[in-house]
Length: 577
Image (tube, rainbow, N blue to C red):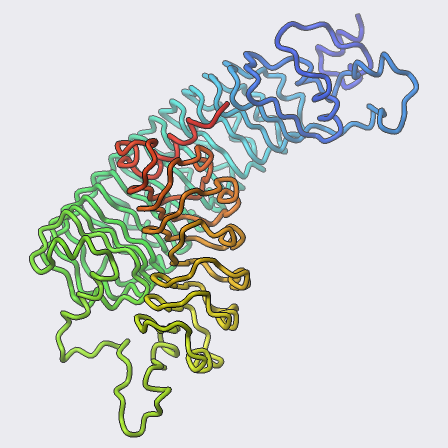
């Protein structure tokens, strides 16, 4: 009786009595034994409607085997057990969590996503070592104030719940690095968010926000901000002072204009499609030196300023379905532009059949229309009597000033050695060997391994990739054409963009793609994919997934049209339980 009283009181000596019999779903003793050794317990997908009491008391009660076997070997020393640090209860049928969660004070990870929770126990606030809490995909309507005591918390996932408001004390979570509040019913954000100075990723997508507090600009570490699908009519001007911001998602709001970005020198992606933006001016663009993706489709933009050419690192420009009647021809000189979408605009100077020929033909046309008296900085030097034959085809200005090594549209079977010799000690960031007759990747490309981050080998006859490509450890963007997805790509973990459209790729390995934790864009349009593996939905870093023009039946076109987030969510829903 005394032992039972101690157990109820939470006395640590309670472990030296037999645990009381309990009802509820059984958890295999083998799992419990393994968890005592490893400190980790995974009970996901077991149809649990409640958590068995002996799980909460795993570090308090004497194991059953201790009563059965009094001759302990080295492997059976239950008193040397490890405190539980990781508990996964995902994908069950839990409607509530017991306050007894406080009996696991060593927890650093608690995952209860995909259950039926309507509330959280206040005792969660006592888990002072907790670093990651995932309570997404539940039915939570509120968050207990006690949760704000978790000062070591780094990741808090609350997406896909029914939250309409947040505690004012959010600013106490000073070590938070990742916060996902997407797909809730939030109408405003606490001003205390300004205190989250270590936050790196903030997802507020799919809520009911009409404005953002200007104080959000105090988040000096924020790199990714997603405000997709809200009711924002303006963006606070202070947002433009966030010097660490790299990705900004403002799609599907009610914006009529873009802010200026004087301090966002690191901004790489700006997504502002499906708004009501009418004017795109020079002030919106001129400071965005690092921008590689600008997505402004489905707005009311009437013209594109010449200053668009200041975006020298721009790779993707989506202006589809606007009111644009003319384009600056200088757009054709952007050195890294690989994708330009213009369909659905009343363009007067560009024929519709030209739009259907693809980005490279379009850019070539724009360059051809530039006035003859405007000398492009990319132009090769004229051949004179004093010019050596080898120098006549080497653009030294491009190598030294633009960090570009270009030898494209030459129908060459090999890249001349003089091209690589010309680089010498100049660090080259971009290589363009497209539209030739290459059968293999030039072996000497390895010489550029310390600087090259963008390689274009499109429209050649390359059938496989050599392992040398793995040595280009800064390679982030690769454009190439294949019949199969090159397995070596899976090993280039720094890749952010893979453009494999208009090939004959028949299959992909989603498990390998999941390991590429920097991959943000995967373009597989117009290939031979007969099926899309559901596990592709687990590639959480993907922000742009293009699958149109393949012979698979699912996902259907209606799903694809909803965009990347909807496609990934659909694929995840198809993963077998």
